Image 1 (cartoon, rainbow over the protein chains, first blue to last red):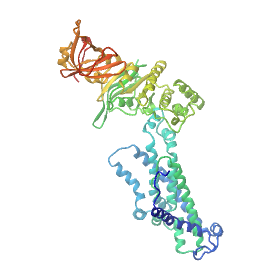
Image 2: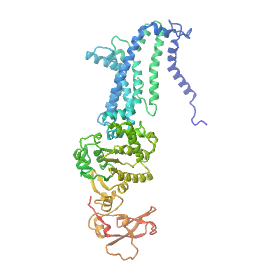
Image 3: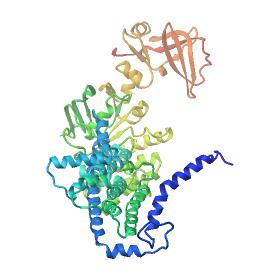
Image 4: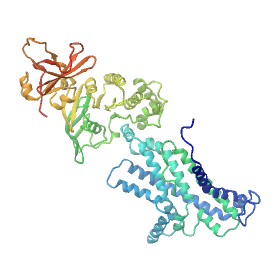
Length: 270
Length: 336
């Protein structure tokens, strides 16, 4: 017996259409990483080959710089976000004061703001403070929205902690650092891991803020943009795109499974 | 010998709210002391002042003769059983109980042995490898108790320890807590809003209202001789008689407490002995409660409730009834 009526035909068609619209471009990217023809993306591809993977690996040293930079930036931005996001969540978790809601909105804002605003704002700020553009300016730019992800995850987990647990720990003789290490950290660790993975994925494929805060360096997404404008060995770009998909998608998937038990992973949509 | 816990004019204000307002009290070593009061009366804040989770706004607190104000909770030799138990969900029961010892740096083997001992004491032998989430409410409560007692505190604080348990379990735990306290000789201070619990467990009870202690004494003291209408009402149920009525029926011209179980039915035409008084009225309610029947009559606007032993009479609502009591059952109180 069916307890609910099935979706109507137009609704089904719309759903299928939506899915195709979203995923056909992705499928094409993946498909053309394997094509034997490099000048134009003719359909269907005349043949399939793993040749471009070997080209990307052996013959294109220009990929390694941007890849290394992207990993470096993502790791640093994630580390900064883990420390600051956790501290911010811990500070706002149980505090009540005038303007608390506005303050937490300010923490979330960087992820809601269009990247171009964040980018322009940071660029002007760096200019005014005469900070030369470098890897660190990119890291700072990325940290603005990475913090949000960690903050949201940490806050959601903190809310599940009972406040009396911390009092219990202190009652049993533990000071602040001991309480953090033995009681708080073990309970928020998986949320931090999930938040960190999301932050890493966000940073790894970020283009807009990076464009505004980078000097001469190119991160991997910037390198790809340049490749599309001045193509050579087009399928190599698709190979790199595949790598980006893998590097960003797997952490997000892992983060999803880590936090699935009864809470949301906030702000995964930049 | 110094008191286990001593409050000298202690106040704790939260902004305009005087949660604890000029409280002085001494709790002797080995006492089972109950702080009883409605919610918001300051009893829990007092407990938290002893534990160190709150610091007094003014006044002086001593624990076994040592100044306590200014000391953080982890520097006080008192332990707390929390209302929600506050067990650590990521640790086993054994690790929970051993936590205090682990923080103190006691070697693993020794603290595990002591944890097992403490668990046996609260009748949870064999539960040490379980997680708190696998235990029932009553079992969690025992773990919380073991986790506190394993540290051999000088004072054990219990915050509404039995509030979340069902009636049968609560009665059983009351007896066990009392037995444990006798066996260990540790000073127990417990907070409750349940007057039955306070009366049956404690050696001494302090009744809180509006941040102040309104009466302190043995359970029999506060029950038999409530000093104010608030106490008479809050501890058990009582008939609070207005001054005029009391003066006319064997008492003095003061607000007067008369416990329902001190009242009996006056037989028609009986001759009352010296010191016996009676009042008649219409029966307004009859509640059959098994061992007793609660009957209330209305005497010209004054309601008198009596708790009569089961089976003394067949009483119907609306009938006329005379109730009698001895003059020495009347307790004059402060008007407040």
